[in-house]
Picture (spheres, rainbow, N blue to C red):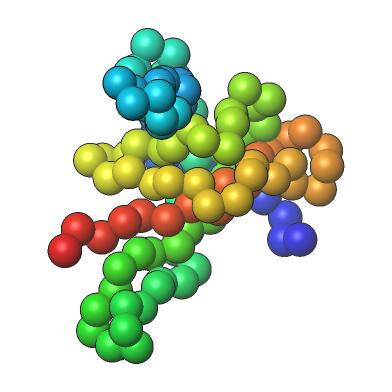
Length: 113
């Protein structure tokens, strides 16, 4: 694992806390009401893209690694908001090197069609 420098956390992002809700039909969904959101410093780096139907020109999602200082209250369903963009986690948060210093979030930014 490459060394992470605290100074590389240069983006101010909002962690949008997920809240489980049940709709009229009894189906559970996740909502982001904003009451428990908080801001953190982060490093955002893209590392891949998903292609639709094998067309190189048609990118449906861009994959990112977002690194923040370790916080045990960031859950798998929480998402990241930065400059009008929403990053949805694709894997559970990863405690980098199991040292409780940094947390790595594997995310996708969905590209509107």
